[in-house]
Image 1 (cartoon, rainbow, N blue to C red):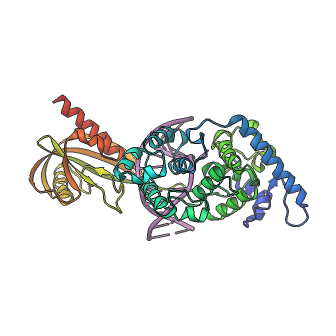
Image 2: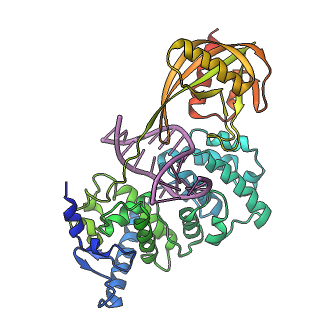
Image 3: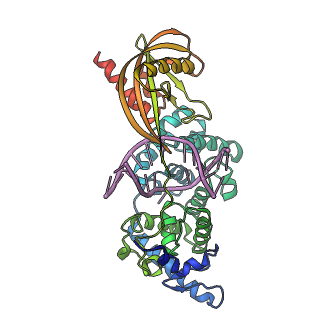
Length: 398
DNA sequence: AAATCGGGGGC
DNA sequence: GCCCCAGATTT
C-alpha cells in the first residue's frame, strides 16, 4: 500500500485544477503551460495515438455491434452497455436487433414487447427511454438518427457519454467519450491521485479525453481506448507489460498502477425485508403492472411490498392488509414458497414468497388474473420471473 | 454533489 | 461476500 503522501508527492497533485494540457510522463510534464514547445506535446499525442491504434488493429474483439457503423445499432448497443458488461449484453443485443432491425420497427413496437426483450438486463428505464426515443426520432427526424451531440442528448437515455460514443463510433466525429474503462485508463495515464469519478476528476478526464483525440479515425480511436481499458488496463492486475502506451503512463512510470485509480467511497447497504404473494383462484394468479414512478415501471409483478412486522402472526396480518391495499382482494396466506436474497441498488433485500388463497373482493386497476403459463408473455423482474417459473412447475406437477 | 436505478459475473 | 460494469437522471 502506497501512502497518501506518496501519491500526493506526484507532480500531478500540484496541478489539481482541471488542466488537461498537462499530461505527465514520469515526473516530467510533457505539456507544461509555460515553456514546453507545442511540438513536444504534439509528438506525445501522436505517439500515443499511433501506438494505441496499432494495438487495436491486432486486438479488436469481434463484437456483434461492430458489424457495421449503423447509428441505430451503435445506439442500441451503447444503451445496453450502460453499467452492463459486454458479455452480458451480447445475447440481448442479438435478440433485440432480430426483433427490431431498424429504428422504425422499434418505434412501432409495443412497450411491453420491448421490456420483455430487456428482461434480466436491469435498469429498465433504459428500455422505456430507447422506445420513447425511437418514436421521437421517427416523429421529429423522419426516422433518421440525428448526427449532432446536442440533438442526441435531447433524446431520453442519451447523456454525454452515449452521445459522444454514437457521434464518434457511428459518424466518426471528433467527440470525446468517458466511461468506466477510460476513466480508469486516463486516471492511470495521468496518475490522477483522487477518486476520478468525483466532479473534479470528471472535469479533468473529459478534458483529457478531448485533448488526446486524433482528427481522423476517431471511431477506432475511442473504441481502442475502451478496448485497452477493458483488456489490458484492468481494475486489478493491469497487464502493463502488454500495454502499448505504458511509456506514456504516469501510474506505470511511478509504479502506481496497482494503487490507482483511487477507489470511490463505498456506499452502505440497507437491509430490507419484503414479501411477494401468489394469490390463487381457479388456477389463476394475480399480477399487477408497476406504474410510472415506481421501481420496475411498466413491468408486471406479483403483489409485493415491504414487511415491517416480526413474528409469523403479525406478518400474516400484514400480508393480508397489504395484499388488499395493493390489489383490492382479500386473500388468506398459506405456505412460504421460497426465500430469495437479491440487491436493488443500495438495498439488500430478503424476499419471502408466499402462496395465498383468494377469499373475496374485486381487483383494482392495473391488476389482473392470469394463468401461470401466460406469464411467459409479460415482462417481469428477475425475481418475479423466478417465482413465476416456480409456480408453473408446481402447477404442472399437480 | 449526492442519490437512485438492477442484476450478473469474477474472485 | 465484495467489487465492478461502454451512465443517465433526478433531487
